[in-house]
Image (tube, rainbow, N blue to C red; front, side, top):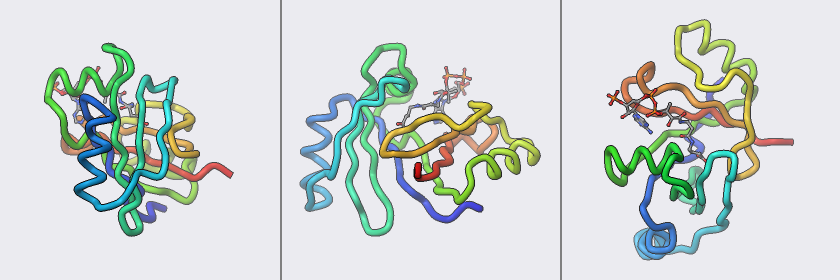
Amino acid sequence: MIKNVEHLGIAVQDLNNANELYRKLLGREHYKVEDVTSEQVSTSFFKVGDTKVELLEGSDEESAVSKYINKKGEGIHHVAFEVDDIDEEMNRLKNEGFQLLNDTPKEGADNKLVCFLHPKSTNGVLVELCQEKE
Ligand code: CMX
């Protein structure tokens, strides 16, 4: 079952500059920075109520985030929904006709197992399913 919006992913050109901007905007510090080498991104997380903002800077020109910025510019890159059981949700959504971008859950940032859905199958929004790792 999808429980809540776990975070919003925002693609940024420069993580240090964006960290400073979001520190001022949200009036608080980020609680972690993390390099996710498998996704070729450097990330930073801010807590905002029950959800989070994830800033994403591509660490390689060929990364999904760099390609997104080169094409569309900075902005909201994905919406992440938290799920109870990622295998069950992946199966359900596949049967509903959504295009899953990975066949099995993969390691994501912030201690999560994740799966992405292609934006072409979700009204132009890249959707991430995520489940807290035990
Ligand atoms: N949101 C909305 N649309 C997007 C998008 C995004 N984030 N990224 C790409 N697109 C659009 C492109 O603009 C393009 O649209 P048009 O055909 O209308 O021009 C289309 O998707 C391209 O699709 P594609 O040719 O299949 O693939 P791309 O090489 O552009 O890759 C995607 C797109 C979504 C398959 C790829 O970015 C991906 O696999 N993403 C999942 C992993 C990821 O994003 N990781 C980074 C975040 C990691 C983290 O959160 O820690």
